[in-house]
Length: 246
Image (cartoon, rainbow, N blue to C red; front, side):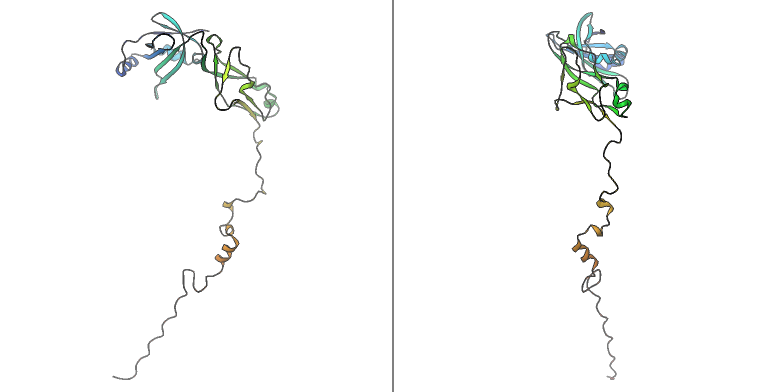
């Protein structure tokens, strides 16, 4: 299914010109790539906003008509307003039908309700990935990649290499060479600690945590004095009165 975007050439550039376009309910943008120079464009906001709500808009070859001349492009980037539902800027890249492209496409998970792990094992399927990067020629670009969960078993996972990709499409992975796409885990299957486990340090009294020698030293009274230091000195004897009269 082809998606068409209507645009016109944008003659004025700069921050002020872009603000005026947005106030006029238009979106400034740019088209680059291919053998042509980059072109500044403007698009009516509302049709573009509603078109971008479709999943296929983000992973399909688009027909961009600039001043009536059509060319095939991919959506490469866009900026939204911080809190308004307003597109601030949009970027398109021209497509060469003879060159391989790289793009992220969404994953569609199917047949989870038919999985034995879900029906009889009580497992819950987690979607670890929601999209994946692929490489292919423009003519082979799929709108999505299907992930069949029918044969997943409890405690196991589906990896990228197990996916059935359309002809001419290959997966691009980063880091791990075979990342997990989805997993089926039974809640509460993790090993739980028993009541016979050794108590933690937080549950043991402070005196019991000391070494035996330290505990004995703390329990015995300090020699030669009370708690805070030396024993109190004896009271001085009262001075004798001199009965002799001077």
